[in-house]
Image 1 (cartoon, rainbow, N blue to C red):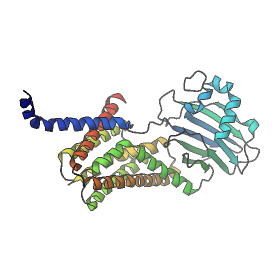
Image 2 (cartoon, rainbow, N blue to C red; image 1 turned 180 degrees about the vertical axis):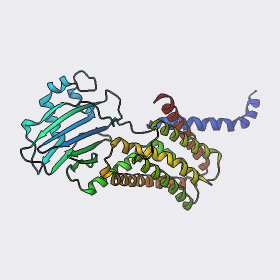
Image 3 (cartoon, helix red, strand yellow; image 1 turned 90 degrees about the vertical axis):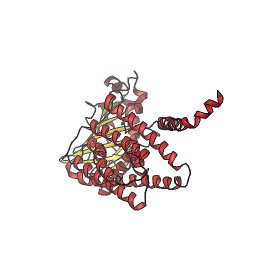
Image 4 (cartoon, rainbow, N blue to C red; image 1 turned 60 degrees about the vertical axis):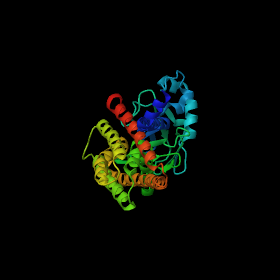
Amino acid sequence: MLRNLLSIYPQTSKFWKIITSWGIGFLMVLSLGLPSQAHWADLAVADIQVKAQDVAINLTIPTGLLEQFDDDRSKQLSEAEITKHQPELQKFLAEKIRLKVAGEKPDESQVKIGTATDLPSNLNVTPGTHSSLLLTYHWPQPINQLQMNYDLFVPGVNTARCLVQVSRGNQLDNLVLTPSNNNVALIDAPLGQKIISFIGLGIEHIWTGYDHILFLISLLMLGGELRYILKVVTAFSLSHTFTLTLAALNIVSFPSRWVEIIIALSIAYIAAENIWRKEAKARWQLAFGFGLIHGLGFSSALQELELPRTNLLTSLASFSVGIEIGQFAIILGVYAALWFLRKSKWDLKIRQLISAGVIVMSLIWFWERAFIG
């Protein structure tokens, strides 16, 4: 009996190797616990209106940053809670948000904190995660230069940021604040400040866009000569930049849900190809075609900012540069890893294992986006 079982094992070993590879791949991607896109749990939005001697900030932030004032633990500050904790809120926010006009602080006796009307329409959060406050400041002198130091970020989260929109008369401007870039001029902001702000947003968007990262990894998995890999990457960059620009300029528009569904399927297809194909021939055409869809996905970050037309091109160009910088860093890492992997006798098995894991993860994203989200 034992001999008979042993005699059929060689015939079934290939089957079990496949099952094992897919099983390990499934566990591998689940252990990563990576979301398919940023869900804005760490995002704040500040709509700042500057008048002659007054500044009003409609501030929407994760309620967890104000949990000591959330008496009923509803994860949203009520008007009664804001009124009750007015002195403590003023002290807390004065330490976290510091405004100065020509070096002078606002008149503290006229700093008020109230309830803002609604969550901003461009803030993609579920109810009960964020609270909106209306902060008003007054200076005895006219406001010509306004500096802000903002330090109200979710601690320990490298994607935490605050999207700032500043309006002064007919002038409208946008900035992106991060823990490392939180001291900014709000009036006549230097061009370099805006460029660095959006380059950082582009880098962050690609590095936290785990679906885009898996697509890049899958795209390069078959390897090839460096010249051909550059051709593939260039095709992807050109196509996603093209549709990113069209979407940001509101020339084309597609339902974001369908874009995200197709992105998930594109990852699954490329990863599946990595299992049955042995060479990367004609992959640059696929990279170009799928890049058109991924560009629409990249545009979501800029569309949520609702950028004014006055500085749209600068912001768009800076954001695109940031995406390319982040993408280049990922590609370098993947290329180096594959180069070392090809020296191993386990090269093919490891690449198939990774591809199997990517397929599983992308199909999970597809299910979430098509039937749950």
